[in-house]
Image 1 (cartoon, helix red, strand yellow):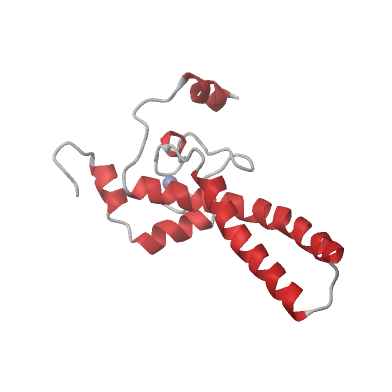
Image 2 (cartoon, rainbow, N blue to C red):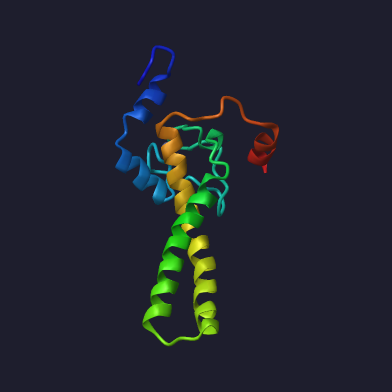
Length: 142
Ligand SMILES: [Zn+2]
């Protein structure tokens, strides 16, 4: 996996166990060292890890975390709604009152850790942008 052209830090990043990388990502920490938070805000990724200099801001998570979050949340909510509808006499309105807010709350709670895990997976397999785009450079200064 580690080739002649790859850096020593990149190689050691790839040697981390998958569960360690995923666990640190899910805990919203730097997937490489686990000592620093990976996010500056709710979903804004730090440009660099201040502890190990991993280029967290160059990992192209893009739309993967929202898609993964939707898949996870909808499996939970749809399963819960179908089981509740079949085993109780609850009205459809009551089901909506329970499961619509539950959908929003679960999505908001899971999006950040899933983005952290996505960050870890992409770092582990070595998918990192080579250069910061202009918008990311401007965003890093703010
Ligand atoms: Zn780090």
